[in-house]
Length: 574
Image (cartoon, rainbow, N blue to C red):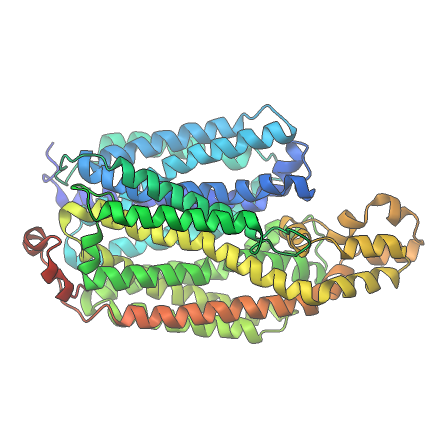
């Protein structure tokens, strides 16, 4: 049956399948975060031992790094050989990798290495899906419905990040393998559905593969993101490693590789990164605001998890072992706000244009961060839930219209590459945001936490030598402990020192309130730094969003004719 036989029916098939794919790809980026304690217990490896922090960081960030590096190349490849073909291959890779992750038979560092490698393979599948999903939807829907369609797709994807936290918290205590195994039947269903239901509506255009551009771009991003993972770890007696020779060398090599990439892309006949697309005003400022939005919110999830798991939930009677699941549950208002606002703002932007919705969403997101900034550390949950819901609504207001504006501005035969470029800026910004947020938190903690922790432990009978040793540990160890749902003091002080204490002091130190009360002032300082940065990024993003221009819909014939000519600089897409 030809693809055009039932266009109304087909567009909903394309949207449903692509939304399932994006949900899986984004959900898997977060489901393992909450499951980390159970995963590391399952493979018998302590993630808080400094030598093992590499495995923890790459288990968390490896998937994001791969999707960031490959998404432009795979979007460009979709333009060349067929978007549906690359998309379908992504479902296969993702599903097989999920199955292989669930059958890890090794333990210790070998088991962790196996999981990291399989996560990287899974990231290749996720990149195939994310690189082409938006282009497939854009091909299937008419211009006046794309905001609504892309809104649904994008918001479900963003919400998948937070839904994964709850799902991971439910499944991991039963068996850590379930967090990977649950994707297998859904992946098989999605694969069969994609191969039987999707059709190629684009016209693939054969071109030479830009090997030099792909290599220099991938190398530059990998080096940059590797620098992030080392930058938030202690080095040379400092709480963070951004000034270390290793990190500076990685950053310099990354910059050199990316400069070489730009030079290559300006000269080759068929570049991977379509630089002329930046002559399109709506694409350029839409992509810039995408980057700034992701920078502002990429580390938010980690900060909220640490806030809830390390402080608020223990203060309200939850054991540290229970906090991962309940942190995900208490963050649900954020997802609900996005799910409500995303499709609605996408639908309205189809009628009235994207500029004001996207810009207003960024301004409201900045306001939401300001509310979190002034919220007490030991907050009233009702107030916290309202702020999270407002933030979710604000993000939904921005994400859907902005994505539709970017995709509508692209010539039809460059949607895969352009959509991949936009997604690359988004994913790269998330990794950078995590590094920035963690760095700011560590700087805030390092100023006062060591003395506070040492005096607090000694006041409850811990020997001065042990107290000083614990206080001298890098603040990132405290953050990771809280992030993973461990009782940081119990874990770091150790059973030998704890057993030498009186029953009263032992109960106080290992209780729910001791660590949260001790860390709150230092944590608050770090949180203020992180939220102030997020507010600034949102405000700059709002300016970039406003500069995309007013509403001027582009028809399909116009898009094919103008392609990437210089006059596109004056084009304002809705």
